[in-house]
Image (cartoon, rainbow, N blue to C red; front, top):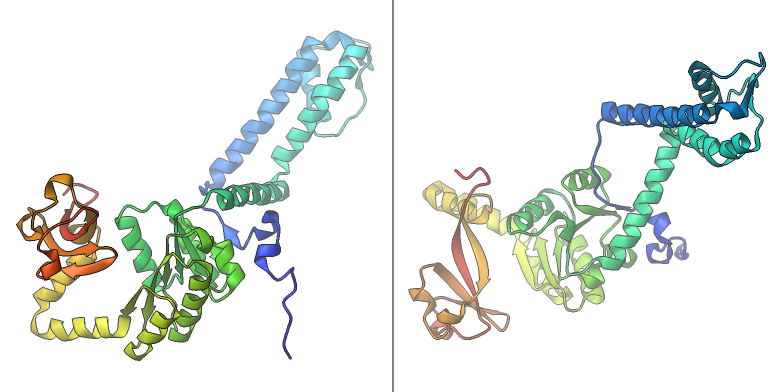
Length: 355
């Protein structure tokens, strides 16, 4: 039986507030102790404000004993009033006191209850806050990177992006595993819960406005479907996909992938090299690790470098990118640098601690 997807099933047809739980915006996690302390301080502030207001206008209140209100009486009245106990032994009688109760004490009472009984209300407030942040993010997101799959390959891809200077806010992770999404959200990434093979999920992730899509699915057939969907939605985006088997590489390229990484062959080649030349593997690992040591990077050519040879530059140049095509440094096309070229070179990376 074929199930017809209703508008309620399509994420793109939902309002922003219903996407809370599908899209997760990174948020600062506050310790429970600090959260409780802030609530207590807020409650005491509201209580103190009510006490001062009643004390200033104490002549407008009547006590059952007909005695003038003392400061302690004001504290007592404010406490029972804000807690909605209301014994009625002290009541506002003057028009001003009653007006103040309507305009000031009642809002303070509501604030007092929100602060003290705020667990449920905080959840609702957080959902509203998330909905507003999602709405704002969806209207402003541009030129970001969508990473489909946050397993081992996806995490490594994100680490490389962050190492290359991409901000966490410029990366969106799509996955069906909530634990993986929680890990991504913990480092400040925007996450979308759903399958990257679905058109509406990728739309929610902003693929139509993305500059690049990283397909890091665990299965080759899934990678093909994700690539097809992403290419249909984003004809101009750079799509980089990972595939386990070499025989499936052409399927990904036919589906629209600009670059394909064969993970099993790459890992196997490194394993084979390690048996004979382990130092070469160490060097390759160093080049692929953006945190420290050496790293492969790309940059625009400078004005004084135009017309010269990339082999004569102080940087160790590996290749030259011209009109989107890569030429190795020993190719005839790379003999002379032209305006608009980009250089693929080896740069030295300083670790965060400066060692």
